[in-house]
Structure formats: structure tokens, C-alpha cells
Length: 470
Image (cartoon, rainbow, N blue to C red; front, side):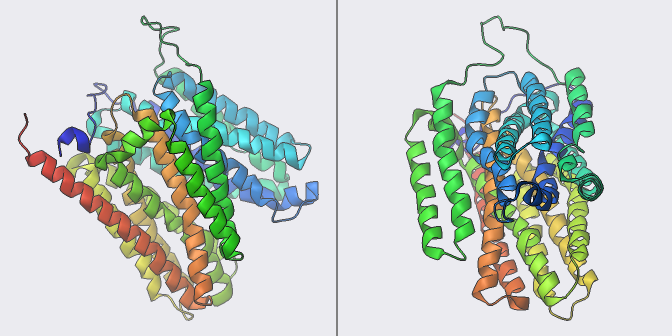
């Protein structure tokens, strides 16, 4: 196997890193990522305001995540031909407009429509993440820059979540959609002044925003169906296994149909390269760790420890702060020893962090849980920065939009699978301490498979490096 088959070539990039751009990306990513947690503060208020069931309000979250899966890949492919700086500005303006729409929604249908539009805007933003990093950060500082972005995002999220809770309680649930707007305005202005953009029309006649075309809409249709079937299947799997399995089978069918179209060739080609595909697989498997915070921790805290949900908030804050501390350290090491090696180290730390939950029982103190969360968070922060650097460096100059879109989808798939795996493990053993341990073993098992994928990638990389060049 040649080195070009293992990892695509990367251009040298800029002479100097634009740290102002890195800061802008960090703030913008904070706004986009916060939607997954901040929307939880709106569910009770929306249920009362529109007279819908609490189960129906789950679509406030799902309506945002579904476009990230459906639009992420085709948007990334399109963004490889578009002006990334211009798309950054337009995507953030769209996030602002759709957030205001959500706050002003007069019906539940309108609210869900606004959330779908917001998720679509977020998908376009996530698609230009890697192209902008590559265009404004020196190649030997990719890891550090991504680590800084991650730290800004995670520490900002710790501060933004209490603001969302306060807004929901004191001002009303609609204001939760608006509290992020000041940060969004700062990110927009910083992007306007610092992120490079193309001229009106390049000398070759290339458009700054190429037409989307029917292939783009076709991709959204089939990937959207696959994403919807996946979300529904995982939701039904515990309580209605037959219907859940049927939906998961439909996910496979819709995905296979999508692969038959010409528009799927570019992302599939990127995934077929071990230097990208194996790390992307690892990202999906290890991102499932979110199942701890989304399912295992809440039920262990309330059912076993008999503690209030406040302990969950403290544990999650510990997880996030540990991740934020680890992110820039991981980035520096990724730039020094190689991002694939650092990804494997981060994956190993993550596995060990998850397995610390096996030390917990019915007599554990709250600090025992918090330190376990910190251990898992440090591993996740070490892994996240390195794996994103790996995926960026593995993509060619004209593939970074596709790589960014695929990375976003991989992470979203893992974040969707994780809570379902934790819930199934909990239910199979009857919950309690055994349920916590079963979930930890299952999620650590997924992370370990991700680690094996990275070890495989390392071996292929080492083999390619020892082969004589033609």
C-alpha cells in the first residue's frame, strides 16, 4: 500500500497561524454545539405553551440533529467548491435568523420547522470548519488550533448552560433560543474581519457559491430517510424491539441506496482510505461515550444514590472541564508525535476512564462519581482534538469540506448510538449498579474497538513509511 493510499497529501498552508480566526471558530462552534444541550431547557415550556406531550417535545432536539446527518455529507462535498469564508458568514446569519424564528414560533409545527432550518445552517457551518482551519493555520499547528477551539467551545458551554437555565426560569423558555446571540454576533464580526474570502468571481470563472443541484437534494432525501430511521429505531429498540429492528434495517437499506448514486463516490472514496476511514470509525465508536451523561449517570444518580439531578450537573461540568484542559495538551502532542498516535493514546485513556465506573457501587460518595466523570472527560478531550487533526491532515486540499462533513456525521452517529447502547445494557441486567457497570463495559467495548482501528491505522502508516518511493 502506498502512502498516498493511506493519507491524502496536504498543502503547506499559510506561513503564519491566524489565532483570531481560531478564536472566531471556537466561539461559533460553541454556539452551534450548545444547541444540543440548551434546547433541553425549552422542552417543559414548549409542552405547556403548545399543549403537546413531553414525548413530542423530544423532536425539538431531534429536529436539530436530523439535518446534521442528512445535510452534513452533501454540504461538505459542495463546500469543497465554495468560498468557505463567505459560507461561514451566511451560516451564522442563518443560525441567528432561525434562532429568532424559534423564539417567536406561534405553533409547535413552526417551532419544529425552525429547528430543522437551524440544524441545516449548523450543518453548513460544520462543513467549513476544516477548510478554514487548513487555510488559516500552519500545518504543524493544526492540533494546537483544534485544541484551542475545543477548549473555547467546552469552557464556554459550561458558562452558557446556567444562563440557559436562568433564562428558562426567569424570562421564559423562548428566551433560551436567544441568549447565545451576543456570542454569535461576536463570532460573526470576528469572522467578517479575519477569515479570508475569495474575490467576487475567480479568474477561472469559479463561483463563490456554486449551485446546489439536484444531486444535493437527492443526497439529503436518502440520507435524511436513513437518519430518521436510525433515530426512530434506536428510540424503539428497548420498548418495541421488532419495530426498532425494522427501522434499523430500513436505515441500512436507505444508506445502501444512497451509495449507488454518483454523488456518493467522493465521500465514499475518502472513507475507503484507511488513513481517513479507520479514524472516522474510531470517532463514531468513541463518541458513544455521551451515553454516560445522557443515560447511565442520570439513572445511577436518581435510582441508586438517591441524589438530586444537581449531582448530574456537577458530574457533567467535571467531565467538560477535564475535556477542556486535555484538548490543547492533546493538540500540542499531536503536532509533535503525530495525530494518529495521539488519537490512539487518547482512545486508550478514554477506555480506562470509562472503566473507572466499575469502581462505583451503591455506597459510593458523590465525589467518587465526579472523579470518574473527570477521568472519562480527560480521555475524551485527549482523543477529540487528536482525531479531528488526524481527519483534517488525512484529507486532500480539495476534500476538506467533505472530510469536515463526514467527521460531523461520524460524531453525530456516535452521540446517537451511545445513549441507546447504555439504555439497552441497563435494561438487560435490570438496572441499578449492575446496569451502570453493564453500560460502562458496553461503551468501553466500543471505545476499545475504536482503539484497535487506530492501531491498525498506525501499522498501515508505518508500513507505508518504510516502503521505498518509486
